[in-house]
Length: 475
Image 1: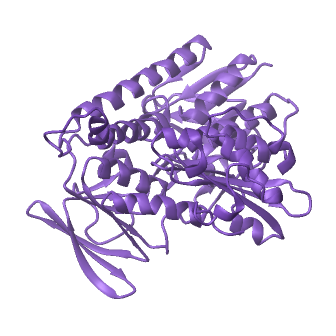
Image 2: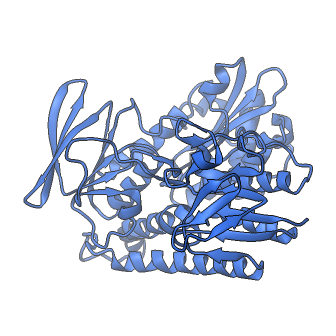
């Protein structure tokens, strides 16, 4: 195929679209104002997972030393984050170099610049004023942190999640505004390093979109790590001075104050559309996001949008999947329309929460369901790993046993998302999952056990009389 494709934004959605287009014969120009890799690679997914992993190693050091028969002389966590920051940066830099190599090897023209629409499929570069004419445009400019308009919140004492990644010293006391995925992951990073953390969440629980039972398991662990979770709480004002920050907060009992050293604002992100000049191209938006159909087409012929800029769940793998969908449409290929149902999501704390499809509450609101659970306390691989908290929950349609959703909370459960997502995507039944042989000992055995439990209450490694003792809620 011939034609000129211009991709705005070099995150995972953008570079996926660019590479796919180039490999099918399109002339591709990729415009990125910052660094390739976007939010996920540079200040999101990758650096936070590095910090979570390495801070957890520091947190676990006393236990491992005790197993070796040694005492740790200094039990306090290091204040300096220099070595953790170096590990984080090394991982990010290696992956960014990899993306640069992919762009170069696929003969993609990379422009380090900002692009603004000057008309339909016409773009102007900010630095030179140069005009680009395109046959197709894919918008993949991602999202930016939301800073709520709260009195006194703006200032050096308040960090966005992007800025928190670059801290070189940990605060003694940290308030996190927002109990979503970003908030709880940072809460555990700093709690692992013995920072006193308080999460302020306006909803009645953290991670409001996830399964309540799974969230309860994580909340218990965070509380044991000296994380105070204050739900139903609003931040009303902030006053900074003398090296400390005083927060005025309000909950059901009234107003009170909280004194901390820093604030991390994790109140969400919004589509990054402000500087695109969408009106010049006639591109429609809805609630601040670019409107697209199930082929990622905007209302303007030849212009597509993918990833965070389209709103919805802000997930890197969602952006990549949308990019593949958009390019299939551009290239005239037969491909399924984009569907959000089998979209995996994960919280990379310890224990992790990983889920796909409908939660028990969502499925139950639609009709009669079967629910099966299996605890990791009865799973050999989890036990020998020293982290046996949590469970697998499977929700299936009561009439046909079709698997509608899977929720997992426990050690490394994000690694089970591939199988779980395939089960939902392929509309597998409980029997199909049961009859799939799972290697022993692995965490994945819990999936088959939970399917047994949903179908007939016959989880092999959990005697029926001991279900309640193992911490499995009654069906």
